[in-house]
Length: 430
Image (cartoon, rainbow, N blue to C red):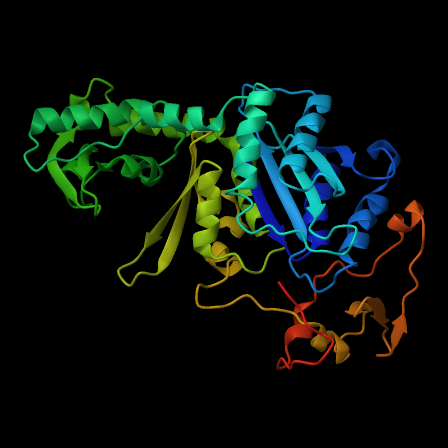
C-alpha cells in the first residue's frame, strides 16, 4: 500500500474533486467516518457541511483540509467493507481517528485506490499538527496496516522493480561486447513492456537507464536509410561507448519494428491516460503553492517520472510523463492542453514566487460583496454585503453540524490584494 497525504486551503475544492468523480460515475462514497448518520442517508450538502462546521471553529488556520489517497497493488481487489476498515485503522494511526472523514472508492486508474477527505480542526477548535505526518505517522501506519490486513508491501514491490531493471553502468574502457550486453539488458526491460508511440517517448524511458536510441542527424546516412543505433549515456547525459546497430541485438529493435509498435501502443495506452491526469490534478487541484519541483516529486512517489525538455537557454519547451505502473509514456500535449509543458508551468507556482497568505484584516476592510466568516476571539462574525458585521448564533445538537457555512477557509484572491497590516485581534497562523 502507498499512502499520499496532501493538505490544502479549501475544503470545498478537496470535497468537490471527489464529488465530481462520483458524478462522472468513476467513484463512489463508501464511508462517512464519525458522522451522525450512515453515508447512504447523507446528501452532498450534508457531507460537506459536517467538514465546514469544524473548519469554522478556527478560521485562523488557512490550510485546513486533508486529502489522502491510499493506493493498493493491482492484484488486490478489496471489498467496500474491508476498505472501510483499512481507512478507519489508518486514520486512527495518524491521529485523525476522531475527525469526520469521507472515503471515496475511485475506479479511474489502473490500480485500486481510495481517497479520504477530512479537516485539520478538531471539535475543540484546535489545529491538528500535520508537520512531517507523511514521513512519520503515515509511514508507520502504512507498514502496520500492511501486516495487519495482509496487503502487498510497498517496500517489497519497489525493491522488486529495482532488481528487475537497473541502469547500464558506464566504464571508461567499455568495448563493443560490454556495451552491447549492458544496452541489451535495458532494451529487454523496456521495448516490449512500455507503451510508447515515438522515438522521443522511448528515449524518455531509456535515458533513465543510461541508454539512448539514436537515428543520427537528418542529413546523416543512418537517418536517410531508416537506420537506428543504440548508445550508452554517462551521468551527465553525454553519449559514450560504441554505437550498436539495432539489428545487432537479438530483440531486433529496429526502426521498422518500433514503428509497428507505435501504432499498437497508441491503442493499448488509451486506458492509462486517466491515471496520469488524475495524479497531476490530485496534486494541483485547488492549491496555490505547488511548485514544479513539488509536482514532480509527488508524481514520482506515485510511480510517474516527469521528463522535462529544455532548450539551450534552459527554458522548458516540452514535458513527457513515464508511468512505471501502467508502463505507459505520454507527451504532455497528448493528455490535453492542461498537461502540456506551458500549461503545467502556468498551473504551478514559480520557485521565486511565495504563496499568497490571506489574513483576516483584509476581510475586515470589506473588499468583497460576499458574506465572509471572521473569528474574533472565540466569537464568529459574518461580514455581509453591506460591509457590516453580524454576530453568529451557534446552534446546539448534532443537526447543527449540517447547517450551511458560507466559507471553508479559502479567501478569494481579490481579498489579498491590499498591503498587509497587522491589527490587534485579527492574527492568523498557518
